[in-house]
Length: 280
Image 1 (cartoon, rainbow, N blue to C red):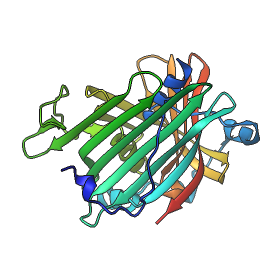
Image 2: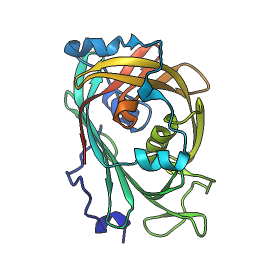
Image 3: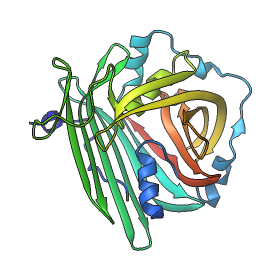
């Protein structure tokens, strides 16, 4: 039985998710994408540069305490935008079970004309010091085109990865292995520290080994639908600049992700913009 089936999470809302342009829009949000805000949110597209580091952006020093402090239940709702138009919604929810296991859910639902795309990612994990340790990872995609359903369990005692039926998967076990969903929570924890770059080994939603690298870029003040926020901008490092992906984390809000953006060949492909944040 999967661990999360026995849970009574503090946030128990039903999860719904994401779905040629629309499929790319949905796929971008899984990790590397975002959406553009509408005209009324135009200021969010032109962030005000902040030249001084505020008190809220002073890194949290102790790794274990930092991970525990930043791993707290919340529900974040986002607008999914692309080139000035709204194409759907997204959410990120972190909840905890009575047994102390964490559940991190990412959902997106997008539509464009008669096309639809819904995606759902779910990670059950525990904290080991300052590290996120996934126990189960679920990925599901529905809508126009082929559907996809993927599930894997992490066996730390035997250092193996198993499918829903108990068979080995294509990906190999790696030290501090994450999944394509949990990596964003690990990044949230690490951005609050002193390092300026990070590299993670993970298993993606196709069951393959991947390596993701990120670097801290700058401090910015964003004007979002929820108000003005001081943020830290992080860039995903790629071999070429053909695709660019940026993440904005808000120190005053537990370093929660408040905006994501993906650009391809100079054109914005998607943007996520925070519209509501609820904490337990």
